[in-house]
Length: 262
Image 1 (cartoon, rainbow, N blue to C red):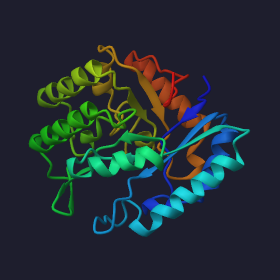
Image 2: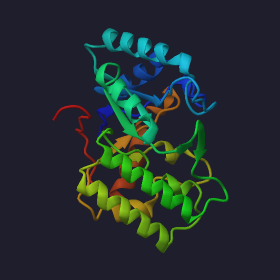
Image 3: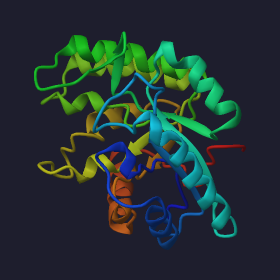
């Protein structure tokens, strides 16, 4: 199967990606993408900095200007949308709404951290425990319920810090999946996680096979996200791996998914 959309694309502004905006778009077009979205990590206002993870405040206007230029230049080749991958952070809800009103097309929910005062706290590290997972699930559920986001990225990101699937992780996953089903929130199979070194096809850090076999038992829509951090991440080999993973989990991918409209 060919993937004709991707709404999860980063840029070098994030600090952990390489390549120019137009390079990402051109590689996506070569792959056959017809609906393309830029979605760098959310750039927060001045005072909220997270070096190496997201763009600095002064890069916001460059991001918007660059993506709008490409949107116009390639308008006859693809539908190009402008968005962000963002955490659900209660203090930032009004900011998100202002961006959606007249600056960007969409947000996707990618929960990596929470905010205390103006300091970002990552949920997961090598000493992470189930309590961190519980807070992560609580915050993702609030994000799903907020109505701000079009789909949920890498919902099983908590496996980044977990070595074995267990009953606690299964129960926390069920809590999340029940809400996603209730709120009709699509879930992403994240291709980026498959690129991480040290994992074979049966034991990806994420997407985790135990999580997605469980997710397949819920009435949830599944989408693919390239989560590109390098223009060369747009390739059919990686897409085929993700399709094979979905098949082994009993998941049917929506290959026609439109993030806007019906």
